[in-house]
Length: 93
Image (cartoon, rainbow, N blue to C red):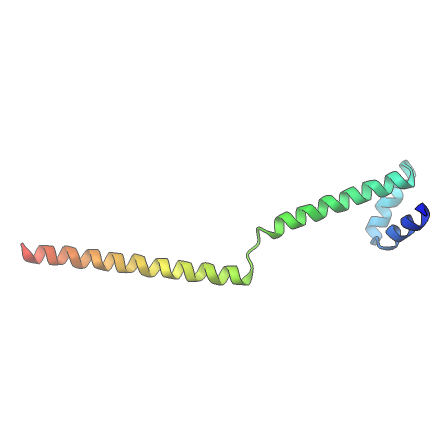
C-alpha cells in the first residue's frame, strides 16, 4: 500500500523533484523524503497563491484607468470652477 502511494507520488514528480527526492532519500527514509518534498511543494503553492492576489488582472487595470480618468476630470472641473469664481469675484469689486 505504502509503496503504491510512493510510486504515484514519484510518478507525478518532475526531473528536478526526482533529483531532490533521491538526495533526501539517500539521507533519510523514503517516507521522510516524501514528507520533505510534499512540505516544499505545499509551501511553494502557498507562496504562489499569496502572490497571485497581488497581481492586477485586465479588469482591475481597466477599472483603475477609469477611476484615474474620472478623478482627473473632477480635479479639472474643480480648478476651472475655482478660477471662474475668483475671476467673477475680481470683476464685481
